[in-house]
Amino acid sequence: MLHEVLDTATTDLPAEAPAYIAGQWTTETTPAERIGPYVRAVVSRSYPATPGQIETARAFAAAGARTVAELAPATRAGVLERAAGLATEHRAAFARLIALELGKPVKDGLGEMDRVADTFAVCASEARAIGGETVPVAGWARGVGNTALTYRAPAGVALAITPFNAPANLLAHKLGASFAAGNTTLVKAPPQAPATTTAMIALVLAAGMPSAAVQLLHGGGDVGAALCAAPEVSVISFTGSPETGNAVARAAGAKRLVLELGGNAATIVCADADVTHAARICARTGYSNSGQSCISVQRVYVQRSRFDEFLGIFATEVDALTVGDPLDPATDVGSMVDEASATRVETWIAEATARGAQLVAGGKRDGATLRPSVVANPAPDATLVTEEVFGALVVVLPFDDLDAVVETCNASRFGLQAGLFTNDLATVITAWRELAVGGLVVNGSSNFRLDHVPFGGVKDSGFGREAPKQMIDDYTVVKTLILRGMSIWGQA
Image (cartoon, rainbow, N blue to C red; front, top):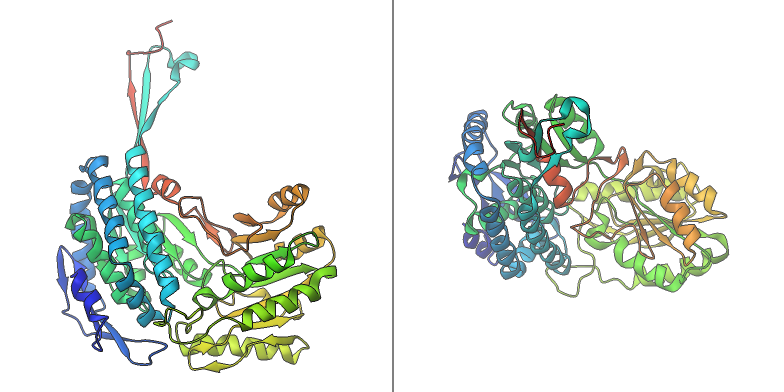
């Protein structure tokens, strides 16, 4: 199936994206067509799950959980290492498929597949490190004469609901960590990237992941809600909007949740920073994947004494970005996921400029493609300041002192990640302590992530941390063994 999906992407035919349920690829239901946002033609065809297929998948997952749990960590690690190798081997074909389904430039897709390989490799390493502890029970009088041990056991059935903006790597995080922990996983694909998700499932199966370990279902919110409510599911990992995250939590009930719900990331440029460097970094990272990243540079706050200098360099760098066909290796910015998303950002720009903001660059739209846009000095309560843009737009605003800009950043309902350009260590420590975010990148923009480092937010940006080690904690349960009358600590 892996070659079938990837090879079709090199033709003018739509890529078939079957579901994978109970160990079988299936195209039994009425197909849903995905229109590529740049090519404006059908690029893939998926098969949304029926209620009957959801029931079948639930039952198969419940039965398969024990089979997967019996695999030794070394066996699971070996599968994940082979998956990392296959991700590298097929990176170009995946990048092309991602470009067709999402309008994401191939250079970004290649980078995503490099991260997929890293993510699977890290998950393999973490699978080998799963263990437990000897509890010091004899430190208390009632524990004398006994021994207590723990180990981390698989949670059972995990549900991974993945977003469109990084469909391969975010699936690698969720599925890779879940399998490393010894679980079976139900995957609900994003409707915008069904073929990419199908190819990823085919990849892990080709790497040796047993059919008991993974199933793939396509569909919309109704399929996701049904899976969230399934009593067989023990843990849910979801990446998406706060509104959908709230719906996931309501449908899930009393289940363990890992929710990454987006943001409107701020990057702070202080007066002592290398402004040219900061402007170039913000231009490169503010528009990758057309700004459709939860940590994409959205708000840049520049100390007032360097504001005009930064804005001029930044606008020049943004204007120099190559916009166009995502299949062209030279393209920096392709299309957004659909025309409605591009129109929404265009509308927010118009609203802000009508209230006095300056459109410094971009602003023009052709279908789903919005030229990289820079808006300066918008009102503090403008929509493009307070909400998540998730598009090819960056706003630039001045600030006077660190305390004030930290307070401004913290007024947001989001708190995922921030960037800070400064050479002053005291400023770094203060910002790290005071900013209400899950992560701070120093001398880099907000849009930087290492896949083996804890990642996640606070407030409406969600909770839990997405890195293999931390996710394995979420995907496992602590099981305790108490040995009465047997002690490794001494009897008195």
